[in-house]
Image (spheres, helix red, strand yellow):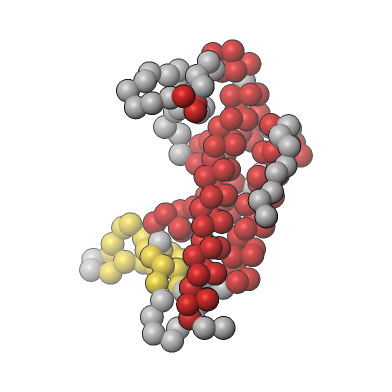
Length: 163
């Protein structure tokens, strides 16, 4: 397989991860609103019609909670069989958001490094170093797919797949 095909496959896999992470956060926020009667009663905004400058209710859809806080609140409200393991999802999101992905010369696959935010003198700790292999992408997508299925079940949504 040539470098161009490998790079395109990498980009497609990375897009799957990012889209799934976005879907998990939004789905968890929607589930929190659905499962919280008070919030559900207050939810009157129609998201597709909102525009810059509009004012909306402060709730799980609109607050500034980070992904970890959102998933913790989701787990507190979801049925036991719909709760998810938070750490792998948050760690993956943080690695992709704050890490450095690169390829160098003949080194394949691309490499992902995440550096500590705190320096020790003139050095910084490498918190994560991994090769973004097909196996890694497959494992990561599976983790996110399982979380999405739990959210789908909580929301009682129909599963739709793009082909």
